[in-house]
Length: 549
Figure 1 (cartoon, one colour):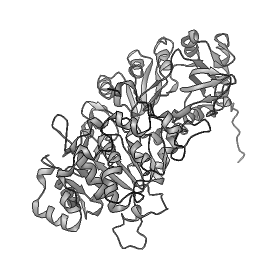
Figure 2: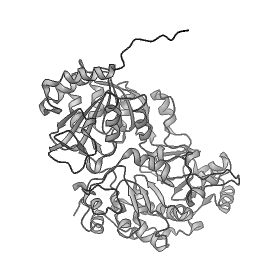
Figure 3: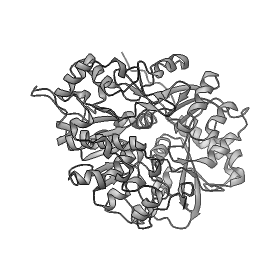
Figure 4: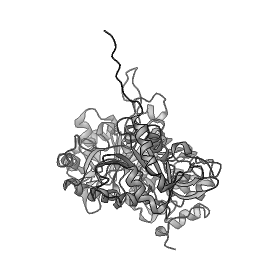
């Protein structure tokens, strides 16, 4: 039987891109879009039904392009399928209310979590899926390949090369997904210059550049003011340092965002120092440049730190500490969210974070009733990566079997207070995510970290070493033992709890040498933002909203 050749064009996407670019030649000068022409240009370059990536991650927002997108005529540009790491700005959702966009795939929606939940309920938008960062980036090269991407950079030169500075983040990844599949790459820059400090994205990846009327929006997302750290946070931090870091010799790690982990960072030069743990724990980090880590860096605790992104105000400090951070010749941080997520998945021994709800089996989620926050990178780092083959003391410490083929696992630690502000219990019988999935027609419940990936849970009551638990019922009893007076905690059986303590499956403060009365703010290496500035030798320049002196 003879092969039948199909007569077809193999350059349809390339031809379509060329057609669109030719259609805007009268609106641009070479590759530079005149600011006053941005809306008209986008209206030609973006077609109805296009898949569009609008850069908006945790911190950096392509805010000028977001505002321009909102000004498009929905009669001409509509039914867009948006792909966004983070739904952060009001404009990100305004385009759905205006009828320009209809579907979104995203990873995180913290600032807009309440609004997106309401819009979903009202049928104003459709959700493809809620992703982790790596999952979303991966799909940009598989089945969410973009037609157009809208990204942000610090500077461009006259040839179109881009400098992204400390906040490189996922910008090159987004650009690459379009640049090598005949998509259109449009960049807003803060300024156009003759020479760049370094080239982060080459001009051959870029189609159009517009100089914005103001710098792209940048949030200080990872700054936690030490003055808001409570004695409860400090107690949980002490329990975590003794019951997890010291016990398992954790050296490489990632800290989630929150006051529990900020407290740990500020206890390293004081409480952990008094335990003789310097050099034995917390030496190599995958982390944004947390200001609360400055005292630990300055006192010699930190060897290296690879960053997902920058942090507002930390630029000068980072540039002055190249032995710690990954910096270019110009001194600015080179961050990379995609590679940092990979490092957080495979290269570190422990992920430690927090959550809004934990059920009786240890499943957790930040998606609760009326609030669709998403996950960000927590599921990437907060699970046992079974492809790992290199060993470490902490990783091997998780082996509970004598099987000769037994392997270690990553430590996945949740640190939570048993009740949130407003007396809302963190420990619940069933996650709200289950009902949210039903109401939102999601295929699966939006769980952030599955219980069988969690190794430790720490509360003000104690530590549950659930990786040691034998069977589901014992896991539930271990969690109940440290869940306080929540509905889950009230199911704890005192005799069972005592037996678990004797076997080391549960540890209360007195079991690991932690004295509750010592959990005082005096233990913090810095009590406020001003102290952090002093620790940095004046190099840390916090945003105005954090200055009260």
